[in-house]
Length: 145
Image (cartoon, rainbow, N blue to C red; front, side, top):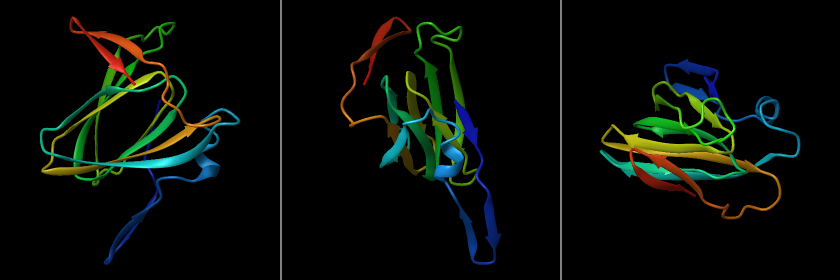
């Protein structure tokens, strides 16, 4: 997992920042893995998008409007950090991006009035629904898609 803080240009008109360059991100993912499509999720205050993920997709996530509390759970059974989690606050103000490798659970909670959450997906081959990953959390099974 990587936290990426993009370069920004700011003047009287506002600011501009770059979320993705192939040159930069290709160094962070294995050969053959290409970013192929983007998703935008619009949610309102107090919405929790539960833990989800898959076994083959890299995700570059950002909050382009509003603020979310991003939680990432390590679902790699052979990892020393298995089932450990980290929380980040990402927002349109701090403009941080999080690169999530496969087998990481992804969840976010909207702490602003409204938020637009963005992620770019990278994978090898064709996109498909991956097998479910089961995660035991606080005594209940959560299925990661």
